[in-house]
Every structure is written in C-alpha cells, then in structure tokens.
Image 1: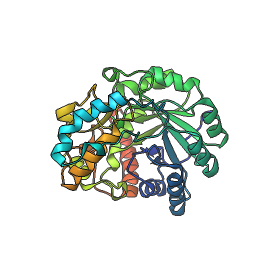
Image 2: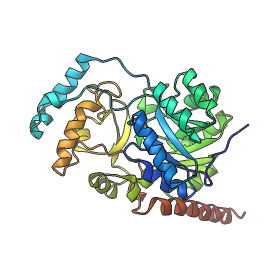
Image 3: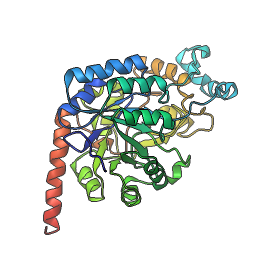
Image 4: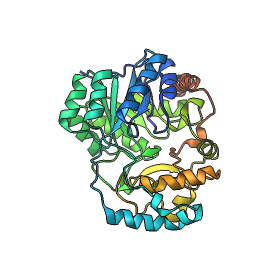
Length: 355
C-alpha cells in the first residue's frame, strides 16, 4: 500500500547541512515536513536536535542521512591535495600542518540507527542510495516512512526494488550534493522536468520532485508532471531560521541562473553551489580532490581563515539554480505562501486549459 507524507502539506523542506532545528520546526509548524540534515552530526547532537524540534512542535519531521561507504585513508591522495592547497595556506598565513585529513561527513551507522529506534521520527530519508539491509530493516521496524534520492531512472528503479516508501527525483538543478550512487558521470544527470515524468512512469511508489523549485509555479509544474510532493531547499536559505552566514546570504542575494556549478572541491563528491574563487581557480571539478568525504578536512581551515577576513573565497555556498527566486522571509510564512501560490497557479492553469 502506498504511503503518503505525514505532514499536512505535500512540501518537504530539504535537509541542508548547517540548518538545524529552528528551520525544521518552523516548517513543521506551518504544515510542511521539516527536515534535519544529520551527516555532520554525532549521535548525541542528533538527539539534542530532535528534542529541540519536539519542544517546539508535535508535528512529524524528517531526519536525513548519507549512506555512502566510508573510504579507506589514502595518504598519497591527501599529500597531493595539501600540495594543491599549499599556496592558499601561505596566502592565509596558515601552517599547512593545520590541514585535516578526516572525513567531514559520516554515513548512517549503528549509533545513528539506535537514535532512530529510540526517538522514532516519522520520516527517515537517505542520500547516496541506502544503508546496509540490516540497518534499513531496523529503520522500517521503527515505523518510519523511508525516502531516498534518485538522480536517474535506473537509480529510482533500484530504490523501488528495495522497498522504499517514496523516491525523491533530484534534478540536476538542485543545490547541494548530487544523490547519485549508480553512476559517477555528472554529464549524464538529467534536469528535473526530464527526469520526473520518467521516474513516475518507472516506479510503483510516490515520487517527490526536487531541483530548482522555489515558488508556486515550480510546485504546480512538478505536480503536473506526476509528483506527489515537492522538496525545496534553496528557497529557504534567506529565512532567518536557516542559520546561514552573511557571506552565504549575500551570495544568494546576488545569485543568477548562471552562477552555480557542480564541484567536488569541497568534499570530493559533486555538489551544486554558487561560484567562488576556489571553484574558478581549481575546478569546479578536480582530479586532485580526494574521494568523498576526505577533501573536506583540508579545505575547512581555509574557509574559516578567509571568512574571518570577510571573504567567501573558500566558503561552501550550496545553492540550486533558482537561487534568484529566494526571498527574505520567515520560514513558516514562506511555507504557507509557497503552497498558496501553487494552488493559485494550478487554478490559473485550469482556466487557461478551459477546465
């Protein structure tokens, strides 16, 4: 039997690293499905964030995890990466020994599974495929609705065959990490409005549309192409609850349709963000970047040093291609407005078609 989202509105706030419980709670209070990005959190921090969401709302929410396979350490790759970054360390007055080598993101594991079992969130979503079957089955037994992202029809079929409750069709326009897990060819990533109807036709479960949906027009279009819900991230970046730095906010305010790129420089895996000096000079894609997520440790000190000087040269500015549509608005008000706009747009569409 097909499951529906437990939220009042078929609108998911995309999980975004750096946005915490205030954003998720505000979206939930407005009737949407708020989400918490967990890949950069430890188990204790996750418990605290979940408790804070529940202190502000009794509405259901989503917790999101990465399900990549942690790579083996590669000293040679890390040495090459530090050599690439050495001139920037010298410019910032940093000792190259400050370059970290540890992962900046962790996959779903036993500790996080225990948090899910103990706290029982209504929805658990995954990026980069699914975790091992034993962990996935424990999530199922917790009663959670299970979602995962697909960037191709093949990935959607793979997820459908493994029993997810709904599939997030992530178009190439989407901000943040590509959810790709059966391919590493970024040139073969379709846009949402080509991908979405093909995924809808290929799978048995509901499909959630994600990628450059930032207003009611995009929501209505997604539903016209067969989506059962939408996932929206970039539109929330200028809300006060998103917790973004002023450097990130200024970059979003200046965004245009042509100012994002897919880059692996920040984490080692393709992700869409606003252009920075780092991306222009070293990429945006580079063979020198260690595999995901081992690129992060050496970039973080540069990010911190340049931001301290008021510069976003190395800032991680994830955003989708519709960043210019983001508005400075309370997250709850934005959620309600987006849905009202979508209903109005659908009504105009019906009138235009003589329905």
